[in-house]
Amino acid sequence: MKQARAVSGYQIARQSIALTLSILIIPFASGNLNAQGAYAPLDAPGLDQLVAPIALYPDSLVAQILTASTYPQQISDADNWSHQTAGMPPQQRADIANTMPWDPSVKALTAFPSVLDNLARNTSWAAALGNAYYNQPGDVMNAVQAARVQAQQAGYLRSTPQQRVYYDGGQILIAPVNPAVVYVPYYDPWRIYGAGWVSPYGGFYVAPPPVGLAIGLGLGFAAVGISIGLFAHYGWGFNSWAPNWRGGPVFYNHAAYYSRSATVYNHGHFGGYNRGVFEHAGRGVPANFHPGAAREGFARGPAGERPGAAARPAAAARPGGGAFASRPLAHSPAAAAHAQAQRPAAHAEASRPGGGGGGHPAAGGGHPAAHAAPAHAAPAHGGGGEHHK
Image (cartoon, rainbow, N blue to C red; front, side, top):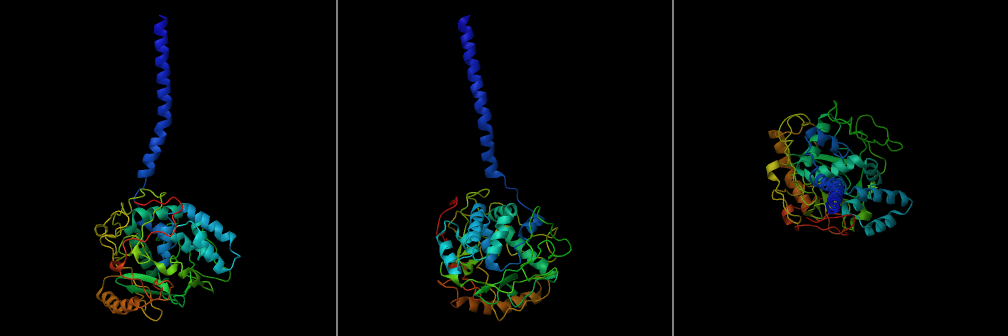
């Protein structure tokens, strides 16, 4: 009898230990599953909501933001650093930023403190934007173009003394008039697109306009732009970046650049959730919109390979040309003729050496063709939980 009781006690102890371990292990396993597969692909309205605050920025700045948003912790660190060093001479700040263990896209944003601060203040939105770009890059590029079309149709997106807005190959491009000075437009992202086209992102903080800047529904610009010359020779400055409107990763120093962030959903599987949500008319898609990125045209592959259907980086706006038509973006004969007329001049301009030091294309000079690019541009520094696919 005593032996039976001893065996029974032993079995009870084993069962208790097993139960305890299962309680501890199951949540851990579930957490891992959620971390790897929790991304839910977004539809057109959801993507419109994410890109609305940045879609009307100059092209190169959009490319930096999309990549930097995949590094939320680095964004927070860089913003804190930016506030702490605000009183330093610009050259000293640029020199220090170059030594920081941040992704090149985050370093590039140190030239734009207000943009960096906006990302850091709106951490939930910024992280969601980064996850959308990493998982749906083609859809995000189409969303930016759709937002530009919508703002143009509403009458608020046009060339100004600060920036050129023009067509190239059916896409709406935005670049500084002066390739050495960048003006970051100020606008209310929930009003400028007109007629309630986009819903505000929950909890998004819209900063007040800079001192001395009074605007209504349109775009406003500060009296003084941001000189980018101090950042050019580091290789990660403004002119080193360009969006890929055909749907792949952004271009950095002439090459397709994949974020190495380990904090995004499905890291190591860039572009795995493109849905082609702008390829058909519907809610969140402007009338007569023709997306540049097609779901079937984006070939995914391991980091280091160019996307199979990635087009060349779009040529940047020329200071003296590329007048912007006020009509909606559409594949009409007139639009096609306009794009064709712009293309030779823009390509010739892109082939000339630009003014952005270190051999990088100037914002007024365009970006090189993708087929001339090396396979992959690695970050100068590898901090912040980076992961190579």
